[in-house]
Image (tube, rainbow, N blue to C red; front, side, top):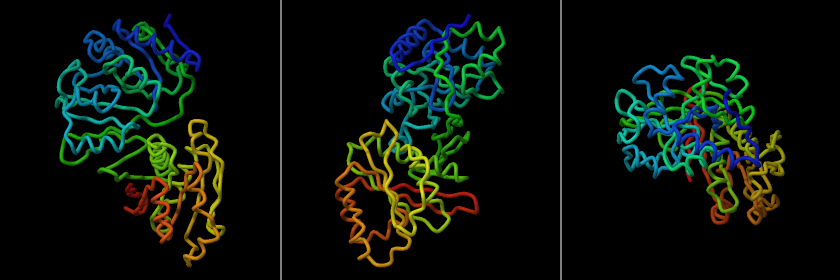
Length: 359
């Protein structure tokens, strides 16, 4: 019978400690991540990796990615240039797997036929705490048999699992149903150009420029942008200035930012200039107010005098400005008193958008 640990807030430390013990003993662990349930083994133990490959029915030469705790650990196991390092600081932690040239310090069966290694730093505290405590990389492949779909619940995983595969698993960590996020976007950074090997929730084609193929992806990029800003902030107000033509996707991006903050529904403020919402998401308690402003109908700079928008710079606030270039002279005040992020959304074609971030 496979050993199952149910993850509760009270039992988090026990779960991590039991997982560490199992990994050190060469065990195979089913573990939650920011995308899907994954399969973890110690990436430095050859027998453990062979056990994983046997479970997955993995063909020879097909790479298996690994979790690392930070970019410094990434440098220990892969060759990283200054240009690549700058890019990784923009996108990580996040839902990306990056392929870099390996230093061949891990089990070679994890590498591709060309000697590259896939590495992940997820935006997921449980995995990050585990790898931090463990001190070396663990595998980051999805918990499914080769050719089958990834799993978002342990019940689904076990229901489809043959007995001859179940006996290979040493520990299952059950965190309930995970959000139905796509597996990570896989990008090859070893050449002059970024190559996307697998599309996930968020795509990019160069530093600070992301690619959206749908309104859903635009919302996901909005969540990604504000998550990075909140996690790097000391509590200083955050101002996001959205620029782009009509229909580019500014409101969709605002919806993504609002969803991240726990604001379920926003109302267009085009004719009233702005609306204020309370931030409900517990993780963001250092910010209390979300201000969504649409400056499209502002034609006279004097209109700002009676709006009182600058008052929010004295409060723990997050402000989003559609058509933010119309702030005019007021921009200098926001630049001085808040962390300002510019987001330009450009039509690439009828369905795709380029989203460039400048800070």
